[in-house]
Amino acid sequence: ADSIVYSTLTPKTSSPKTSSPASLVMKPYVGLGTSRLKNDAAAGAVSSALLAGCVHIDCAKCYGNEKVIGNALKLTQSKVPRSKMHVTSKVWNDCHRPEDVRASCHQTLSDLGLDYLDLYLIHWPLAWKRGTIGAIDVFASLEATWRAMETLVDEGLVKSIGVSNFGKTLLRQLFGFCRIRPSCNQFECHVFNQQHSLVEFCISEGVLPVAWSPLARLDSSILENPTLRAVAGAHHGATVARVALRHAIQRGVAVIPRSKDPKHIADNLLAASSPVLSDQEMQEIDKLDTGSRITRDWVGIFDDTPYFPYRPLGWAAATILFAFWLLVPNIVDFRMPQSTKAELIIRPLPALEIGRGL
Image (cartoon, rainbow, N blue to C red; front, side, top):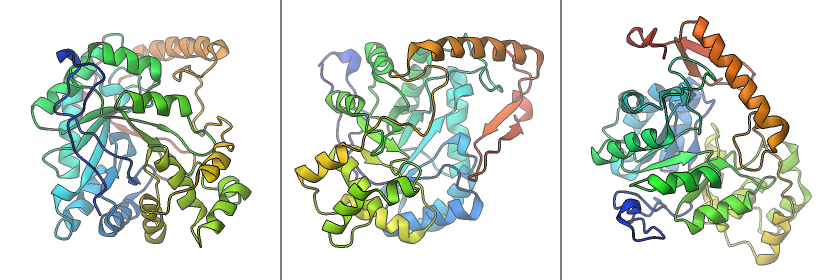
């Protein structure tokens, strides 16, 4: 069943500057993450999710599979109409200039075969020169990028806009100038990194927290965890994964676990309607939080990353990469690895984009 609730966002202040009539407020849901899913696996996962009632499909340009997902959406629309789907995508780091935001959105819509997106996010709070990896774009700004995102809402290309991997500092900065407030913030969140402060801040500001990798690495550390297994056993055969997802949902966090297995997708979806965990069970799972991340922050993006040595390292890396890309053609079209192997997939930019430089 469709578990997404649409309504008008009510900001904490009544100032016209922050009013957001075009935004969506969504209650916590279970969606499908699509990163690293390749070809048939991506198509099969999306079809299985939609037919099982998991209507939120989380995509991104840099995942490199939006055309495949678009084909799956088209094939499934006879049974799940577009109006019941909730499709998210994200603008990549080297498309933060206003003209690139628009072009990226149009490309995503074309690849997905859609007339509009339900939600469009800034993937990371990093602006790179077009066609590079890691070369800071000194002519891009968060405010200009967000203004371009707001324009997409005005023009009906997207229904709602949000952010990903933003901490409280950047969110406060965004609140200071936005006309349309972000409807959600995606970030790493799971039982071993519960991000209580950020979750509570987002909820207090009317921003839905959405957990990517909500099952951590889905290895023995979570599947064999005694606390999670005990809670799962007490709930008459519930899986450990379902308990971990239910814990997030009861905290007000939406979850987008990735899976290509129809059985796992169906089981994950049950977390939204599973019996409520008791206060004691919630507190026991809370104790598993160690603050450990899957994604390491080597350059000081996150609020809780120590200043030293990470921010100086970040500045040094940015300087080196900026100089490197002054000497190398800016033609990289980055795609994430579509497997569990540590590989880098890089494709040339379309011909019209080559050599843009600064």
